[in-house]
Image 1 (tube, rainbow, N blue to C red):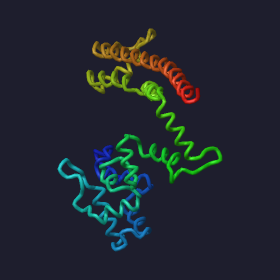
Image 2 (spheres, rainbow, N blue to C red; image 1 turned 45 degrees about the vertical axis):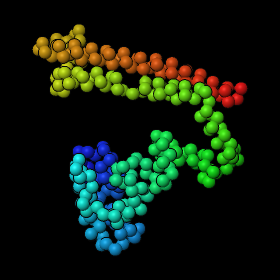
Image 3 (tube, rainbow, N blue to C red; image 1 turned 90 degrees about the horizontal axis):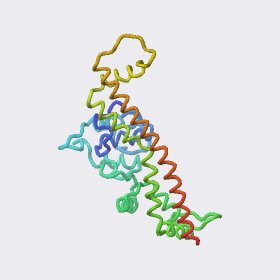
Image 4 (tube, one colour; image 1 turned 90 degrees about the vertical axis):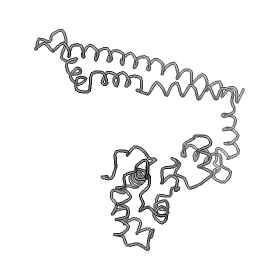
Length: 258
């Protein structure tokens, strides 16, 4: 989609939020969107060509610190977009990451800091009106079990163990090393050092690189070794934290069912 600006990853900007919603629905252009709105009889008082022009203005609008919404965006347009994408006004305008139009779900997400998907899952399992009884479990039983888990003494340790395990799958520490080196010698010299690092072995008999390249290769190899060390450490820690997680989980089960 050609309308994404240099702030395309920031969904607090209306334009980027609208583009994201269109992508979710597989809508690739303003004309396609206008046609779909007319099909659903949304903005039915406007001609399709006029709707398309309005959408184009909204998509091409460049948000600034002083002006976050296009002056062509009016209440009927906001309502039309929200109706079509089934989202809240605050979500469309980038004021929240909770898409639901249900104010209670938004309040729960804001209060607990949980994602909308997580809250909907809990409601689906335990909600008085929404939970569906099955052969295996009634909603009342689901709520009772969830309450036992959340109030277990070891539940906080369970969350902490997952956090520790999750951290071993990140690349932050290793990436920081490469970022520091790139900042120190520059992207071009880093690329050259990488090439020479592969060339310089005991049987290399080509032309001798400059002293600067040799120094850069030394720094490159040091970061490479440190990165490998970090990978080994993370691999070891994963085994430790998985064992720890298993032990904490067993403790919760034993506490719930002594």
